[in-house]
Image (tube, rainbow, N blue to C red; front, side, top):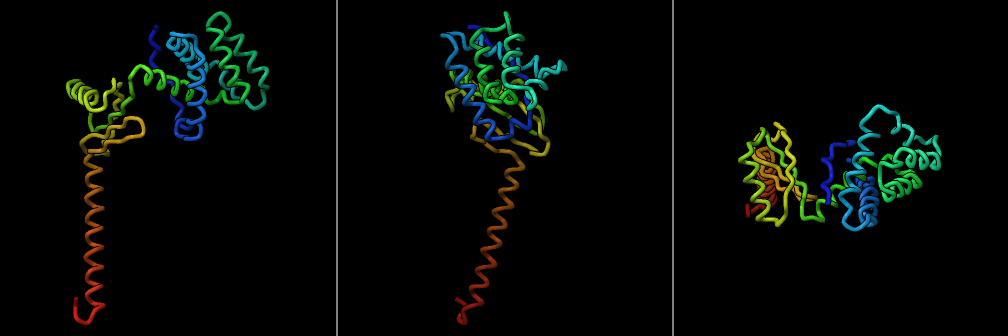
Length: 214
């Protein structure tokens, strides 16, 4: 099975919408489930090539496919012409289904969800590693080994540098976040100090409210 191309497309405004993400995952699952046996990788690579060409170029096709003025039928015909002889019938049909339901603006997110589902099916998981400074290859390899041991996954590390976390690491696997950053620890300390101060003040008020001081 061919390995899917590295995914680069990311549309922030769509990716940050939980509803859009849920809808995109449904389409992504349907596309991969309907793919011919042992061809999910090829279909994913075809989808990447199409989305990259449409949304990461200045051809103007993206504007046409996402326009509310252009009819669904014209969009479906455009997809068929654009992919004739270049992609499988399965992908063409899948994209036309997306067009029929006026969801073509979700294609970058559908591609993203397809990639995640494909990786999960082979035991891989995307892991976001956030640090205040760039991490060395040796450190990343150690993190990769620890994740494999603790979570029984094949991690694909995505690194982000955010100086605001000051130090430590923030690791995200799916919806689970392991936060050992210095910023998080300081926030927790402030929270505990505020809670302690509140209890001390409340305790003094309670003593003043009783004549015997108890």
